[in-house]
Image (cartoon, rainbow, N blue to C red):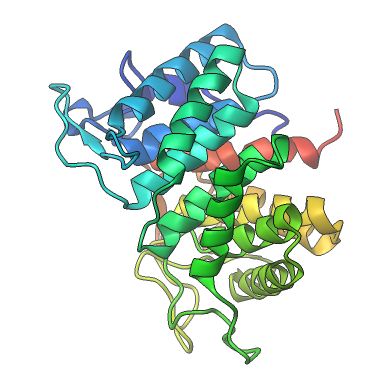
Length: 336
């Protein structure tokens, strides 16, 4: 049964007055590992997507936004790791955390729970949006933040330039049908790549990007479906000829597919993408290679990965937020 609402109890358990703890043993936060912008940005993103947040979620959004803003350098680059002693462990850069911060800031600028929150996020999005990362995944995450801004302010010049740059960083699919992926291997959060192209097609009027994105997403769904369920890329990636299934499978791969399918379904109305979204939700509920649910209904946490023997039962921030993000899309599949 598909839940009607994404559960936030474990997100709240993992959070304190600073941010969200990265790791957990079982459902118990491992506080000594501290925090990272990658996860706090994910948390800000999913809380921002809630249509009717309660007071506690609104309070979490304020804390998460504070964290992401404090991680920024003066030129918009982002630090990533904060220790329990409240000291940053790294210097600002343009890694995935920069892209995820932009994704979260763009989402908050578009959907934040108050005018003040939206304005603050918009200002810090603008600060970071002038940067360009040499890493394709970072650019893809940043481009998804730009797409959020453009959905409400279509003329925003910084967001338009950033989304166009993200699409250009990806390039075009290969000419063949057996492996059209632009690179020799699938890596992680793969569906963010075609999602950015679909977003560029929709919001920038780029018909070539839209066609490329839809083609890649359809192929990616086929590549990650086995015997009627998702069989997603494992930690080590997947190349042409690699056998399936592969382990350990990560929830972030499924969440990326859910996001991309939800966007493609909205843009095209193609039921293939609605089916892909159902497969992603089903993966967390046991429709996977180990027939093992990765959603814990007692804690409302998400398990950290899928192994050949079953689930890794630790419930860290990344996996829990991937589960929450995926189940949020169930609202579009289950009528109220």
